Image 1 (cartoon, helix red, strand yellow):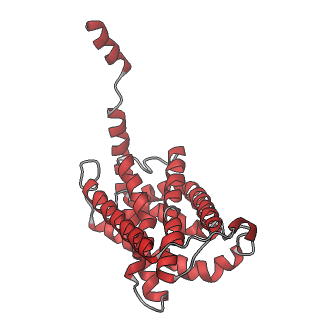
Image 2 (cartoon, rainbow, N blue to C red; image 1 turned 60 degrees about the vertical axis):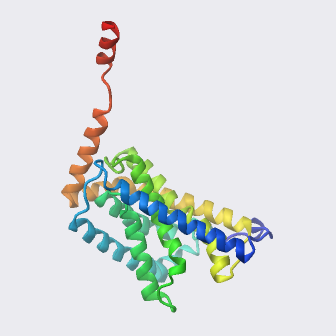
Length: 265
């Protein structure tokens, strides 16, 4: 998957006590991030969650699971592994990122990405894990959606407002945030601490970098199409987009008004 010369020989192997402290700190960051997203989602910038939103999240999470661990692992990934750097660039994630972007475009509220990805992660542990649900590894599932939702909060409801180049940029950023820091933390902290699998610095760096590029480009490609699908399937998504555009236009101060105030003084 990755040339040996890229991986190097220096492994990330911290003392168990240090790994435990970092593990607890990461959990604290995750919980604080979820609380922040919950508080901000109740602000006036975002509409309240509806039963329809919850149903959409559940349906999209199931679709993500069907592709991720059934269609993807059984049929797509073996083919991608034949392509040089294909698996390293996560080319098999293209349908996954498309479904995720469609889900975000349908709901467009903070918490939707974390809910979809985490529910998908729970289903994966229930159906395909020999040990069942592993709470200790939940950080990885949460981190894949947490920073996407923080981006939704930062953009103030304007994410996927239009199916133009802004949707490409939104997709690019959200795809990158889905990959990193989840992949980096999983490789450098969770795997050594919980599974005893130490990775080299080179492996962690290039694995994270290529996943960032791959998921970012895949989400960027999917962005405009996801917006068009969401606005055709869910009229509420289109209305929310129009409201976001109106709010953005209201924040612009007309030039004539500014000049008029200056001359009056």
